[in-house]
Length: 428
Ligand SMILES: Cc1ncc(COP(=O)(O)O)c(C=O)c1O
Image (tube, rainbow, N blue to C red; front, side, top):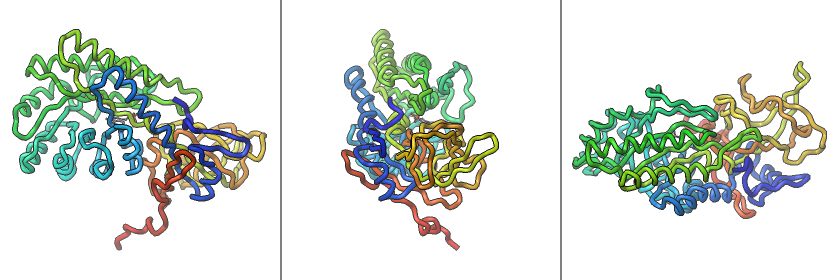
């Protein structure tokens, strides 16, 4: 997977994405500006759907909407046959208003509220259950609404993975999900009940994972759990949800795996294990977020001045920062930068600093770029995932607009906030 959108084109004095000039977009819509490339999102969706259609047709892809969600994005992925994983009433409400098939929506969360559960159960949404208290709430609500709630259990599989490292451990200190044995009495309670249907198990082992092995271990661990469920209750689980977390390339140093290889490897392993045991193959569900949308997005900023620092480097100030992209501060995430229309080929070493009132508001340290003059545009690649969705109004910053580019046409996906928006909910 590329760092940049698949439609990226660069000339001496501009960068085009989806056939649209970043210079023109900045002029027309202002900066900071999120730009999302439809073709890249479509291609990323098709990486999953194509390989699974060929090798494991009983599948469902639920885009992890926390990565980035609005009605336009939801409709785009719905068109690719993809559903959504949601973790809040707000995300659920958004996807219910979109063209996403409600049968392909999975509702996560470790502390779902009664209102959230009511919305989900009333709309027959699949619930990814986190704890026993939630089961009790679901029983009450489903009985009251006279519905049968579809439930799968989130399990801690004993694998913890982070980018290059993973560990297998009997006990995981995660706030999400159950220890496997704790779901057995709950399956017994639900099985055959009027108000609930047990539809499977779920596990998610982490995010931005570069190693394929934890995924293969995950499949064999989950198949072991399926065996136990079968021997305890005679139930072949209809759905096996293996979560998301597939690593992608943000910089040239990232050695991200080929997602086709991981998905094919997991599907093949699941087929072999089920066939070997002569058990039916469950529906295989994945929840990719970043790998669907991260490299489809770029952010355009306008440069302000640069300011020398004592070690010979200099700060380059931009008109956004931690409020539109908190990931470098939160996770020390790294990105790839470019100057959209450089006025020189001479280079300088910069620390890219935002405009917010925090010393840690730094998007990159020590990077080399063509010398940037005030009012030139900087573009940051790979900002499609967890940027807008984690953006804030810190310092009463107006969240930027988001533009969808597709075949030379730019459309507004989200409007830029205004100062009026900033005071809109000030009630006194
Ligand atoms: C349960 C679950 N599924 C899927 C994802 C998506 O992960 P990613 O965006 O890394 O693919 C996450 C991310 O935190 C998650 O918690």
